[in-house]
Length: 506
Image (cartoon, rainbow, N blue to C red; front, side, top):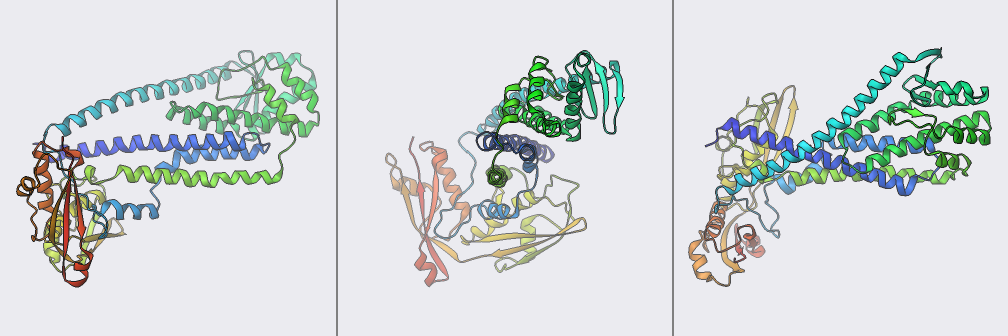
């Protein structure tokens, strides 16, 4: 038998793994959405500064929003749909969690297989991250070496100019590296080049490039990252070209200078170089008619993009949480020793059991470390049926509900548990659906649910287990559908509910 600390560690590791995979999926989906909107809606606009802000904001949102807590509105919907353990209004079927009793090793084997797949994925992912990070470090090291070897020839208010012969003229951070060939150019051409690189520095374009480099390391497998990197570099050049030509008012000669230096390209993606392979696009943008002001409304697309990323993150989180994952941890065990302590536990609305009895079932006491997931387990999801919800439902309270309200103060949390016991129910008819080879009489004789008995969740789960153990039905397809008699609940204190067992024969 696995000791409790080991089981706790397994839960934490699986949770971390799921959260890591979710983050990658959410962030990559957001990046792809940002790239899609930019490519088909904004790329051709001449609002270069606005385009730059859209790209930077979109990438940052895609990377950071998945790390933020789910908005309260989504969190509440999750609680009503999942944390309540599948107890729904009268006209919606109940769902019961059960393990596979036909193969005790199935869960372990499935987990081992999933772990191997995850391990392979993680190794591949980490290999890509290390490779991309190494390339970045190699580029930074090359810049440091170049700066040490280059000849410093000018110091401005916010920049320093170096002369070197290893790379075409470029700028990075507060440094401008002029190629020695610039000395062969005319005075006017040298002034254009210097103004160009000074503008890159003034607009702090290096920060954008470092951001896309970071995104490229974390999400190297995302096909949209190279496109966004090219888009950002293009926007930088468009911004600077417009600024330089607006100052000098000589677009034609500036365009000629671009063509003259076009063959001198840099292979280092994190620097801004005057010579660039996108010369045709730059000259096109220099001569293109400016977009109409009304087209700025297209940038409002950032709002639905943000909303979509938040919605996607919330949906991913909701799908990742459920009773199956949380049911594997014993109640009363905490996964975070540094979490807040429970200050007080207050019960409201309970009549069947006293507060002392419910606290005994709950197995949490004031002073224990508080973990919201484990606390909910003790309320709703323990596989042995020793949770609070099971105690009530085994006494016929089919519509039992419980809500947890947290009040944090200092390093403690006061918990108020609102109980809605609802009406009790007895079994009306026991219905069978899907059995053709096996007679209904044989199945009814086997299962524990009998007409006229008080509704019991544990008996229903026991019946589900026995059907699975028969080996005649598809275990995963066994469903239990309670069908309440609305009139009986309206007329009497104890209503009637039919139980339908739906099976698929093998």
